[in-house]
Length: 294
Image 1 (tube, rainbow, N blue to C red):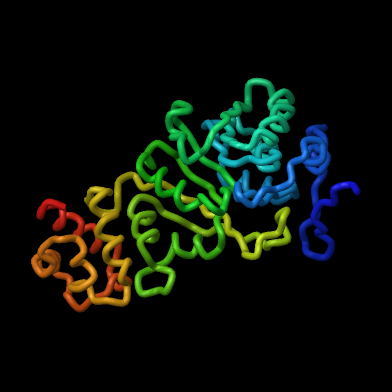
Image 2: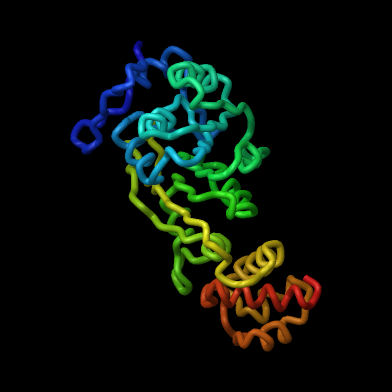
């Protein structure tokens, strides 16, 4: 039985023709046997209208190297190249997809470079000189882990346009005192300005996930929102949100530091809870903790 693509009838997702003359993505998927694998977190977008919208969300593409993680059969890769990307570096660990992407690289000589490997084991910033952008439909099972790693060298990127589960996207942009506000919110907002651009329904993907997805733009700040050492801020936020229902005088004890002194130095009430603190207040706590040897 021939492989059947997603049915976009009646849902506002009408597949666009590929003006490049390349074979349809459905044909590529069938030719190379690229059935999405859950173990790799694969959910493919085949609608070129959608992939072009994601590519355009990254702004100008002809003045920077675009790094894509998990390109799969190359739907977003095609859009990036069609929208004028000067150079795309695609990181992929699935040999089936690498073979399929080889056709695309031949069609765009000198503009698409394939890197075989696990994105968790690679530092994208070492793959090219700046200016750099990351644009990716991230595998859901490693999306948060990848972002946290990239924060270590976030100043090396002009921008990041990434796909997340809607629940994760809401955590990235959450404000204090909201249910989604947590450790990820603090770390991301400390170093970037995140913004949810638009959502994609499950039916936009093959196979359809059980959740809505969101495209998020993250713009690195010229300087962190407040002074802090990232390893210490990570420890403080992990302790505070690890027991988010408890008051800070209790939740921060796991740091092994004089908690009452830390709170007194920062002017934070011992009865406050993690979700009540701003990013700047967490940075102040991290500074105080560092002074005590954290």
